[in-house]
Length: 381
Image 1 (tube, helix red, strand yellow):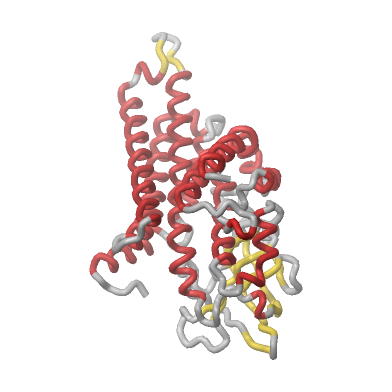
Image 2 (cartoon, one colour):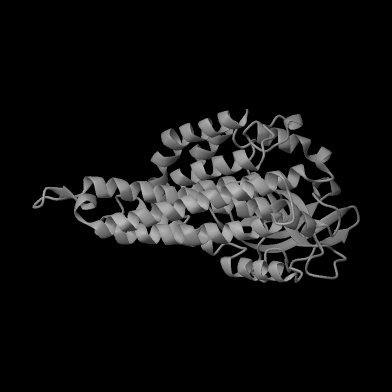
C-alpha cells in the first residue's frame, strides 16, 4: 500500500465505520472492536511494518495523515491506533526482530493488535523510569509490575512492557519485553470510566510472576531507554499532535455546521449571519487549526531529513498539539453554547478528548521543561 492509498483508505473507513460508531462507544465506554477489525482488514494496522514482514513500510508523513484522519472521526480509536503503531515500532526496531517475525506478520495481516505498557503508579508521568524490576531465574526472566493507563488493556494481543533491568543501577537502565495478553500472571484491573477518550479501554494491568524468555526481549539488557527516546518519543509525540489536529478539525467543522444551520427565526438569519463575534471565534479556530497543521508538516519534514532541530521539534509538537486542541474545542463549546452542551453536535466529546490527551505522558509541563533544557543546552535526563 502506498501513501496515497493509505490516506484514501483511512478517509473511507473514517466516514463509513469510525465516525458513525464513535458516539455510541463514547457513551458506553466500550472498546471499538469493529473499528480495529476494519483497520486490520484494510491493511492499516501494518502501515509502518517493514515490507519484509508483509507491511506497507510507510514513514512519518503517511502515519501523520492517517492518524489525524482517524482522530477527526474518533479520538479514542486514534489513541488505540497510535499505541499500536508505537508497540509495532518497538518490535520492528528490536535487535531480536527475527524472533518476532511471526508477530510482525500477524500485525501486517491485521490480526494482531499491540500496545505500550510503560507508565507505572510509582513513576507516574515519568514513563521512561519504571519502578518495577525484572528478576532472573536461570534462562527465564520474571516480571512483576503494576502498569497504569494501558491503552487497549485486555483487548490488545500483546503488551510492550518496560521494567528496570535485573542489574540496573539508574532509573533509565530499563529493558523492553513483548508480553502476551494471555500469559500466566497478566491481569487487567478495573474498566476505564474516564472523562475523555472513554472508548480506548485504558486501565491498569498487573504482571505477577510473568515469565519471559530472551526471545521475548525486545532490547538488549538495559537498552530500553534508548528505544524509548529514539524510537517511541518522537513518533508518539507526532501522533499525539495529529490526534489534536483531528479534534481541531472535527470541532471546527461541527461549529461551522451549527453556525450555518441554527437560526434566529425572528431575524430570518443563521447564527453565523447574525453574530459577528461568533464568526470571529470560528475564524480563530480555523487559524489555530491551520497553524497546528503547518507545525506538524514542518515536524514531519525534520523527521524525514533529521538535523540539529529534529529532537526539539519532536518535543514541541505534542505540546503545541495539546494546547491547540484545548483552545479550539473550548472555543467551539463557547461558540455553540447550549447546542454543544446538549451533546448532539459531538463538540463536547471533542472537548473532553482534547483535555484527556493533554494529561498523557509526557505532559505539556514536562515537555516544556525538556524544551527549555534543550534550548539552554542542558541534558534532558
